[in-house]
Length: 561
Image (tube, rainbow, N blue to C red; front, side):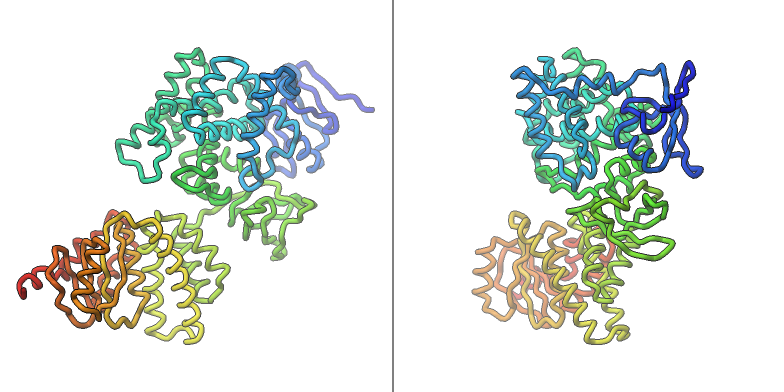
C-alpha cells in the first residue's frame, strides 16, 4: 500500500484514508472549481463527496487540533441513569422536530445523532445548565423546542463549516433564547399581531439572555444570546452590528435561528415548508451571509423552485417543482437536453450544489399566476397563487391579488380576448379561489366590527365577494341579506347581529327605519368603481370607511323622518 506523503505542517492523504475531523490544508479544486476551502473540517458527508467527485488526494494539516478525536467521546452511549434520562429527553425532542420535510438529508448518519445526544448530555450534567434549560422548558415549551432545534441544526452546520470550538458553540446555540425566561408567557404565545410596545419587550430578551448567562457563570457564551438577532447589513438589534463585527459562529446562528423559526409550528403561525422558508431567507439575503446561505441549502439538501443547480453527473438544471412531502426529490429540467425528470429515489443522480437562485418578484408571480389562470392550467395557477400569497399579509390578498386579476378580467371580457367557454371556466376557477379565501376570513372575524350588506338585483356576484373581502381586510365582518324584505325584518336583523352599519347595494334607494347606525347606498357600478381605487394598495394606505362617507345616507334618513 502506498504511504501518505508528509511534511512538518501537512500530509498528503489519499481519499480512501481520510477521517472525520481532519482539517484541509489547501483548497481542493475539481474542474477548475473550488470544491473545498482551506481550513474546512472533514465530515463523513464531505469525505463521501470527495470520493464521488473522484478526488484522489487531499492535503491535511498535521499540527491542527483533530476535532474528530476531541468529539469522539460524545458519541459513546451514556451509562449512568441521570445521563441516560437526559439523553432520552433530547432524542424524544429530536423525534418531534426532525423530519425530512425540514431537515432534508441531515441526521441520516447515526454518528451525528450520537454526537448531538452526547453533547447535549454533557451540557446538562452541569447543574446550572440543567436548571436553566429546565426552567425554560417549564416557562415556554415552544421556545425550549426551538432552542433544541437551533442547537441541532446549528451544531451540525457549524461542524460542516469547519468550526473547531464546537462544544462552546453548541452550548451558545442551545442558550441563544434563554432571555425569554423573563418574557411573559402570555406574550410569547400571543396569536394577534404584537403592538409596538410588546415587540420592544420581546426584543429585550436578547439583552436579558446576555445578563442571565453572565449571572450564572456562562459569560463565555453570553454573546450568542445578545447578538443572535443582529444582521450582517446592520439592520438587527440590539446594537446594529455589521458583518465585520460578527463572528462566523454568530452568522451561522442568525441564519439557522430564522430557518428554525420559519419552519416550526408556533402559536402565532403554522410552520412554513422548507422551500418557502428558504425563499423567504433569499428575499432578505442582504441580512445574512450569502455564502453561508448557499452552503446551508447544500447542507440540508432541499432546494427552492427556480434554483439553478449542478447535478452529480456534471449537468446543470433548474428546480421546476418541489413536493413538500418529499423535498429531497424535486422535479428538474436539464439545461443542455431540455429533459424534465423526477430525481430518482435511489439517488443514482443527485443534486451536487446550488449555483444560483432568483427570487420571483410579486409582479413576476402575478404575471405567471394570471397567465396560467387564463390558460385554465389549474395546477400551475394554484402553485403560483400560493407563492403570491406568501408575499403579502393576509389582509392585503384582496387588494394585491383578487382586485388586480378581476381588473384584467374586465379588460379581457370587454375586448373578447378569450373564447367565451374558456372564459367561463376560468372565471369559475377564480370565484372558487375567492370563496375559499372568504371562508378562511369568515372563520376568524366574528369578534370584529359588523356590517350588513343589503343586496338588490346583483348582476356580478363576484363584485360583492370582492367587496366583502375588502371589508374583512379592514376588520369588518359582513352579513349578506336581500334588500327586498320589510323594514321590520331588517331592523330585527340589525339588532340580532349587533351591527355598526348598513350598506345597500342596489339600483334603487330604499328608506330604512330610523336606527342608531350608519347607512350607505351604492349602485353596483358605483361599488365596482369604488373598489378600483384599492387595486395594489397596501393596507396602511386604505381608508375604506372614510371613502365610503360620500355614499352615507344617514342624514337623509333623519331628514325624511
